[in-house]
Image (cartoon, rainbow, N blue to C red):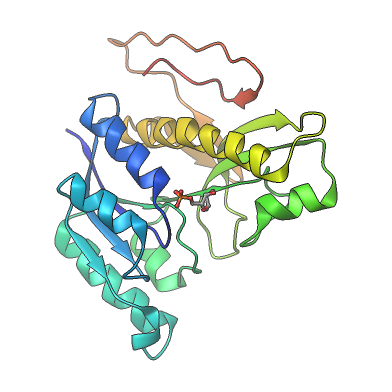
Length: 226
Ligand code: GRF
């Protein structure tokens, strides 16, 4: 059985595309049953359509407030039968009512090493601050922005004379590796939260997994050859 996902995206949608590619190639045992956006112009919608995924897109400005917009999304997500929600460059806060409908089943990816540099421009803020190591984080979503329990992080050093855009490109490429992995762990039922800690449970008894060696970055927990 594959995990049914609703994916929310506001922008270009490269993470959504990567998830769809992992599903098509059979690596990720999930299914995107609906792609949603608050931006009808989002590139993410074209990726979803290319892969035959139904889309729902409406500008949040058409709604009286966040609660009403989120309630409209939630109704569509429930109708589509999603079991978990993946935020892939969704640039808005999620209302408490929405989160209550999917407890421990909403994931987000952030382009910095949380809890440092939360917020909409976390990746750029880290570079502007002058960090020597940055990276990306997949975490469960809670009401406080970018504060939910951390599932997996990837760290990379800033290279000598590296431009911000090059570093952000390397971080983006890492996002495309760790997000499908985190979703696969969720699909396998291997993520167990205990307070702020997220434990990765061993694979099913009939399954052997090999961890993958990394070059030029540090990923924890280690990626598996899934
Ligand atoms: C990524 O950098 C992600 O970390 C952040 O939004 C960006 C989305 O990129 N939350 P894309 O639209 O998936 O290319």
